[in-house]
Image 1: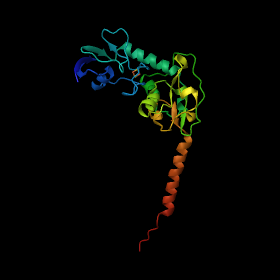
Image 2: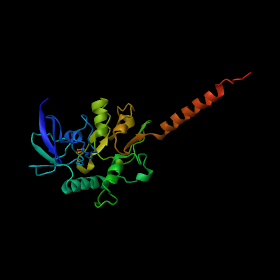
Image 3: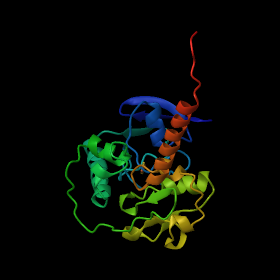
Image 4: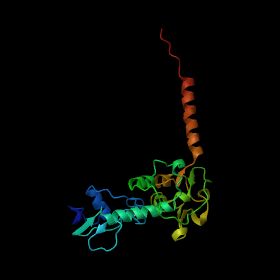
Length: 237
Ligand code: FES
């Protein structure tokens, strides 16, 4: 593979010519925040949290989809970059159901982690919020569109990896919704309850149905019970 030379925050390094700026930054040990990015399967540049400054480029390109070029000079931590990432994150949060304390993903949520990392305690932007009903008809998976950040990682997992095509994006702009085809419930979709969409989701927009966890707990308890009942008494003569 051909190599190109790039400079990132003053560090000059050689990277393969098919790398993105994000890959080059990671190779240089520079941490770039990401939300929508999932290597290979979801490189769509939609959240804009990974923006960087590149000499000669007027806008701030999304590093996860921007290819490296020989001689490129990249800056990842300028006031302009930090401000853009912060505004983009606040805009995502402004249309997010922020009932975090009662959310199943509380303390395990990528969006929450990012908000903490950026020190966001207040949302400046107030506007219309989506308000969709919970889809909990499936026996295994609950879908809460009000916590969805439209990163599409679940869609990539369902379509590109699992080849199931149970969910996709419908509508455009503010009305964009991750849903089963024709807005039907997951229960009426081709969903096979593999749960891979849950592992891909960065927030609490998709989660396991509670009763499944209760069933597992009950089975575990039953196993414990059986072991106690059937264990032979050992008598030491
Ligand atoms: Fe690059 Fe979302 S991670 S645009």
